[in-house]
Image (cartoon, rainbow, N blue to C red):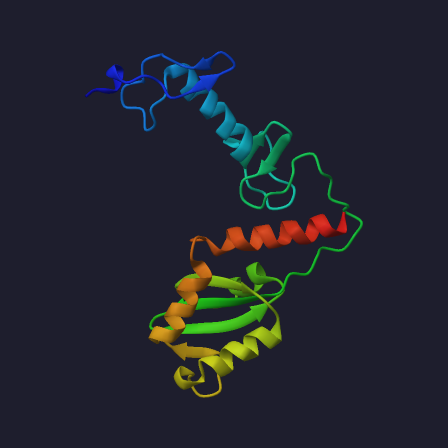
Length: 189
């Protein structure tokens, strides 16, 4: 049976719709009810778009448009909110995981862009929100594969699983950092 032979399952104020289901539709709805569902999804989840200007919090041009306004698609800062430039920049401490050759470095910084620019590495694997206490806990947790008394570790299944867990759903660590900075900025506005 083709979709054109099935009646739409949408309903309105007049009752059930008897229109034909749109060919190839993932749900049995007519064109009109598919458009209504599309508009509802746009309002509920936003529409990804390009911004006219960079986000004041993270610099991204990716935006999400909602009926109530636009937000940055990277850090979720609401366009139109003003950052108070007289306040000091917020501090967001992170534990970073870098790969260089077959080793992984676990370190911490409150200014990761500056810190990572000074370190030889092949790849930034992940960020974890935290300060020296979290860094120390990770050094203890993965002590079995630690190289002497450095911040470098041999790769191990446990360490790689931890890094994979941190980066799950967030392939770009800088996007997570941008969200954390945006949240810190929002708290001080």
